[in-house]
Length: 159
Image (cartoon, rainbow, N blue to C red; front, top):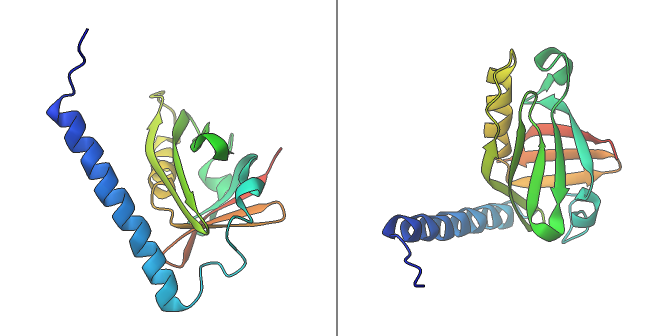
């Protein structure tokens, strides 16, 4: 049996390769221009193994999570070897693809279940911010996710 690849599939693959790689190169160029990576503590590969855990959100875009997600905080689990992330976004489960290169982190292709809930707006904001991430830092039991020099998300290791 022959398999036919649709033109749409080829276009999507092409766009992902072009834009995904371009963004990675743009972040690396920005880091070289600054003379250091953000944050400074992240060194080549040192934090990749430390990511292999479940993390609970403690801060989103400068706001404490208790007010945004009063019942249950979002979590994220990094599966570095499989290049995947999965977690709980405040109401729904999500998963996506993980791209790591030294201090660079990108989460793409995020999909989530579609359960309705009172914190749906906050959940959508959380999932959108996840896909804006460019850098990361693990210090002890804290994970910080950055974009363009701005701290966007902070997590605490749960297990």
